[in-house]
Length: 72
Image (cartoon, rainbow, N blue to C red):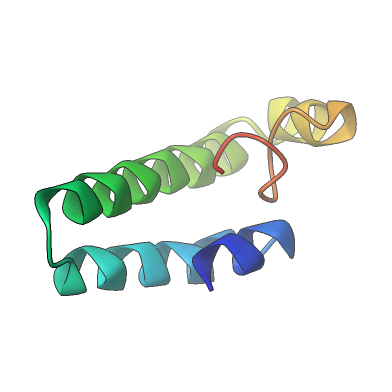
């Protein structure tokens, strides 16, 4: 679900799902994966907030923003 939300540009909502996945993780691998995605998503949100012009450029290049490559 979180990946789908990222593809739709709903980054903040996706973060909630990654955090929930970490809470529900049954193995160390699942936990590490969920926490890694959550942290990358938090970073993506910070870039969008602090550097909107950079985020816009990255989104236009297909290299990030709105789930276009920064977080997968």
